[in-house]
Image (tube, rainbow, N blue to C red; front, side):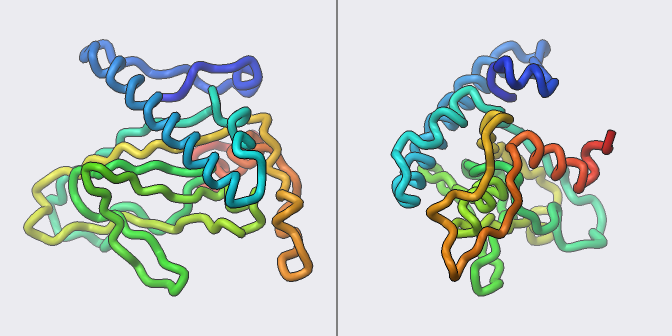
Length: 214
C-alpha cells in the first residue's frame, strides 16, 4: 500500500494502490496502519533532522504524501533442508528509513559496526528503525545504511510461516538527494553525485533486477 499519488508521482507513472476485494476490512485496517506508521516515521525524521543540525521540519515536505510502501511479506514454511541459511540475503533498504513492527517469528538480524550479526526483535511496544540507502547517501554516510538479513529459524520452527510488515518510508520522487553541505568536510569529502530520489530508486531497482533498463 502506498499513499495517494501526487501530480509529480503521476508523471513518474507510479502504480496505484492495490485493493483487496475479498476482505473489505483489510483495506481500512491497512490504510490506518499506513497512516500511523507514516506519522511515526515523520517524527523519527524530525529527530534525525535536529541531530543533523537542520530545521526540525526539514523532511516534512518530502515525506508527507510521499511514495512510502507498507509491504506484507510471507516467508512460507520450510519443507526440506534448505540449501542456504538465509531467507533474505544481507542488504540495505533503498528508502530513507524503514519501520519494523514485531514480526511473526524470529529471524531478522542487523550487522553491527564491528561486522557482527545481531538479532533484532521488536517487542509488542517497540519498533525497529533501519536507516536506508537514501538517507545514508543524503548524509554522506554520517548515518550509515542498516545492513540486515533474515535467517532461517531453528528446525523446530520450520513448519511455521513467518510474517513481516515493514513500512518503507520513501520521499516524493522530486526530492534531491544531493549530499548535505554540513555533512561534507576535509575528513569526509563528498562521496556521491547529485541525483533525485526517483532516479536513485529506478537505478537501484534496475541493479537488483526488479526493473529492466529502457
